[in-house]
Image (tube, rainbow, N blue to C red; front, side, top):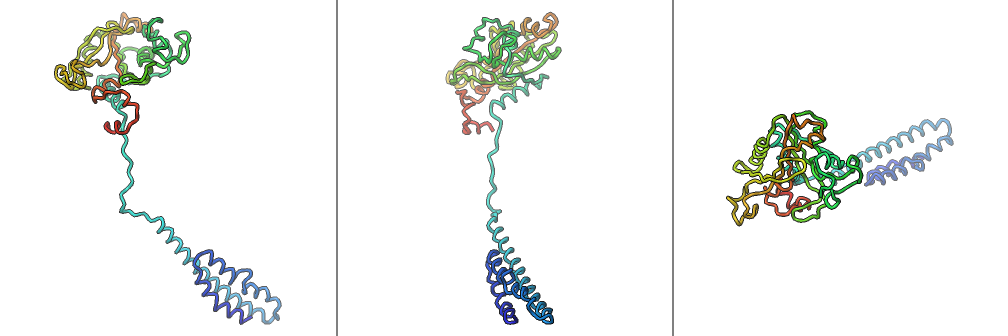
Amino acid sequence: MDDRLTRLRSEAPALIGAASSLDELHDVEQRVVGRASPVAELRRSLGELPPDERPGVGRVVREVAEELGALVAARRSELEALAADALLDADRVDVTLPALSLPAGSLHPIQQTIDEICEIFIGLGYRVAEGPEAELGWYNFDALNTPPDHPSRAESDTLYLDHGAPEDELLLRTQTSPMQVRWMEQHSPPVYVVVPGKVYRADTIDASHLPVFHQIEGLAVEEGLTFPDLKGTLAHFAKEFFGPSTRVRFRPHFFPFTEPSAELDVSCFACVDGASDCRVCRGAGWLEMLGCGMVDPNVFTSAGYDPDVVTGFAFGMGVERPAMVRHGIDNIRHFVDNDLRFLAQFR
């Protein structure tokens, strides 16, 4: 028995020290102090010894087991430290490398234009409102003094979701003007509000038309408002948006919900007096910008206002049009193509 312990004591340290991984160390540990090791066999054979020899032999076996266990624990700590160092080295980051960076995004040029136009009117005391894109036929047409036989109510122009009586007829709004009536139903005069949003038409996509585009509607209602108030408001807007030297002109027109009605033109900001080679106005000298007029008394009646007490004016413009004019864009499809080469120019 002494020979077996002596041999184990001399051979085990080399075996333990030679273990190069935690798995190898586990195998060595089983060989030197495990259940099949000489130490375990000697412990099981203590009962066969004379009673007076058992304490001495047991003490020696315990000392050898503790000694070898300490060697195994020390080697395990070394191997665990080596494994942690290897893991850290594999995950090492070169802090001198340039940091990863993502390109900064920006608002779409249409949203930039909407924000800028709204800010101009907010500066005049207007509020910004939004309305539903799925609209009732009553608000989109009838309440705005549009008769049932008006061409704009045909399916060739309007995208219907559900046909029916005007109060139940559901469609994708063709303009943001329905909010005129919706706002007046919920607010007493004075009213000063602009309404930006998407609108829908049954149009074929080409260089100047989209089936989904954007409009901004404006409405002002108060006692004593006149057409000169409308002219002054829109002249201010034109100068703020296109530049202080911008001139405006009003051409008579017809809209069902305003009377009298007009279209607003602004002087070309890219040339002087309509140069023939101007890429913006193409020699006309003027740019058609929006429709406007004094609110028709029938619209006030539909909204519950007394047309004998209040007057007001309304105007509406497409957003894509002024954006194209300002930036010299010749094809409206650029706004929806999602081409980063185009969009990156508006950061």
